[in-house]
Image (cartoon, rainbow, N blue to C red; front, side, top):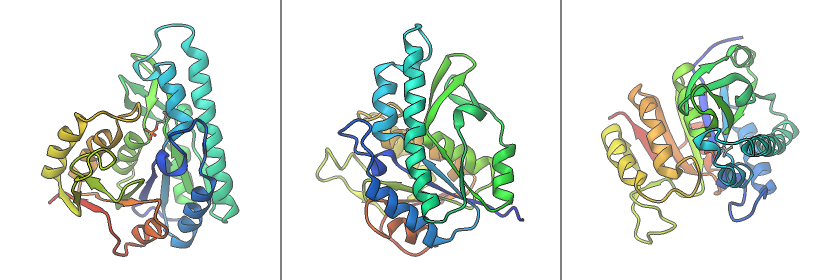
Length: 266
Ligand code: IP8
């Protein structure tokens, strides 16, 4: 049993679900990625996945992010949380099928936010999992909030919070693009890919990307970049790769060179 610095892997919701549908899991991608996680054999790995077409449509329909306003939202909270547990179940099935000793941690049961930011985190079970070399798996979820009643916690906020709390060695982020661009590559054909970003460049880019229209309730790439700032400030390095391309996540986890964006303090 040991407590070395963990690696945090985030798998975007658009990688493991089809965002054009609703409740549309990409089971082949889940199978390939969980196999890559198994083969990479990273000690002290924490996995976080996003919501994609399981979390975002219902969260948006019931305006959950802005908090409790009326009774009719409660069924939406239940629905959204339940859909996330279904997606997480598919991911867990696949990890365990590939022989990864992994255990799911439900954010809504151990995290309370204040105005959307993590305030309390009962992390004793997670610490025990890490000590025993299990792979804890968390996900973007509906959570209770001291000011809003409830809200949506993005997997990206979780990644950064986990990285700081557990003094992570590095963060690997698997998205459905080749890395971080200076504009949304799905909209701007001439968007430029960054191979390397410093903290200063990240901060500038975050405010620029923040102004583009987010495709999901938690803020898209601009939101992702904003969440990473505190982790990069603490010298935790970040690699953003295309998780739809076979072996990219594997290579990033192994620390091998792979096309993508590396973010470091300087
Ligand atoms: O996809 C959001 O998590 P994300 C989860 O990581 C829900 O932003 C419930 C919409």
